[in-house]
Each structure stands twice: as C-alpha cells, then as structure tokens.
Length: 156
Image 1 (cartoon, rainbow, N blue to C red):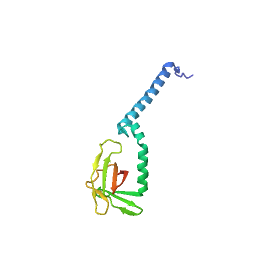
Image 2 (cartoon, rainbow, N blue to C red):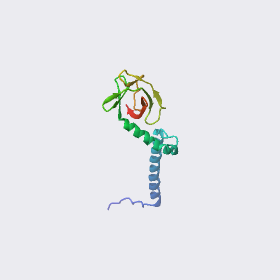
Image 3 (cartoon, rainbow, N blue to C red):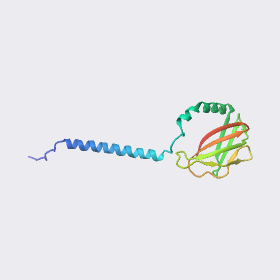
Image 4 (cartoon, one colour):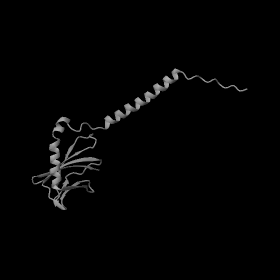
C-alpha cells in the first residue's frame, strides 16, 4: 500500500493571493505603459483648441486656395544631407521667391529650429547647413509673388 501526501485544501487565502498577484501585475503594466506614453509624447498640438476650432474655416479656405495653385513640392536630401526644395505647377518649374522652413522632431523632444534656405540658381532652394542625422519634420512656407503655399514633410 502506497501512501500519498495529503492534498492541501484550496482556501480563501489562496484565492486572495491569486487576486492580489493578478491585480498587482495589471497595475504594474498600466503604470509602466502610462509612464512610457508620457515620456514620448511631445506635448500639445495647439495652444488653445477652442481658438483653433474657430479658425478652422479660414484654414480650409487657405487649403482650397493652395490646391487651386496646382503646385507640387519636391523635397530631397543630397549626399551631404542638404535639403533641396523645388516647386512645380503643371509640369513647369515655379521659381521660388522666398521660403521659410522650420525643423522639429516628430515627437517634440527637441525645440523647433529655423532652417535657412538659399537660392540654388535653378529656381529652387537649398539649405545653407546640412541636416543632422535622424528623423525630422520640416514645415515650409513657400512664396512666389503674392501666392503662398504651406507644406509639411518628414525627412530622414
């Protein structure tokens, strides 16, 4: 005859330990994910959402006016990491009178900095300094006479 050890009964203490362990794991994961989310989010999208909503129709009108121009932007990086900008309309190059550019990190970790653009002699623009390694968001305002267009591009 073999003797087997007696089974211990499942008690309320066992269930309590299981529930406390389960919720401790869930809370630890939630707090970790919340901390990671806050540490990678760059902040607000607009200063005041109410004011932004009031300006929405004006934004749509400017977008329609820009679409009516028929401009397409060509943004490239050369081997030395200089940003090159060209604008075309109906297959023809549009001479850029002036352009302003702002570089920012997509996650907002680094403050936005202006990027100085100079004429390239072919109707386009080129950045005066090379672009640092990494992923960047480039906000452009391009002028040709009284016409203006805004572009946002990701550059790597």
